[in-house]
Length: 279
Image 1 (spheres, rainbow, N blue to C red):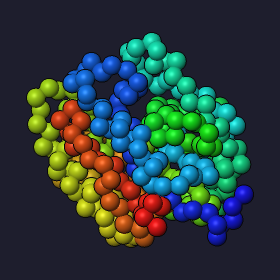
Image 2: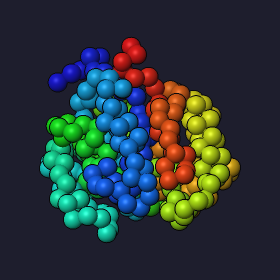
Image 3: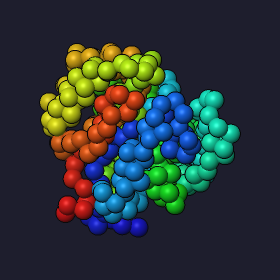
């Protein structure tokens, strides 16, 4: 096992995970190529950040608890938490190992930071995790632990979660927030809507994330004051994983490493810190 000095330090990421199992089916709820660009980007993400993490921590938009919950199963099952999709999408597999040891370490770091956290040996990987990671690391051979959001969706709390988990990066851990930078489903599924609100919020988000440390945290804590904030996120569960990634990044600036128009809305992914391929 690598020591902290030897371990590679990966950037932290906020990624879009698409719509349900969209990358593994024929898309019929819009243009057939709606998700092609995102799929190709996710398939190339591992190479773009460089190296191979020793383990992965994912905060998904699709798991909430009264306090932060941590998947502690040695072999987490999959949760097919999407509805009315083709039958084969409920047979998808992603047998990535869990890590009870990492789960316990996460709990300890959170508790040391004054954050309540519980281990959960029964909860599996939801589609916010296994769908994108089937593309990013398709061999499913890297230990992966999923953590929940706290259901009050307080941005300051989730930034604090990220800060508490930051030491894991010294051990070669990849920390990922999985959500969607624009998540107004009613607007997305309305044909012909020009979705100017998505452009306004995306511009603010990219600018806010480019700041460092406390200045960035202040902006993200008050994200609801951003242009078109509530139009972009009527409920912010798909934005909050960004806070975990940003908190874990410390003083490293964020940059948009992916931008796309999805169903007419601007969607971005943010990377905090440099890729290992640049070093």
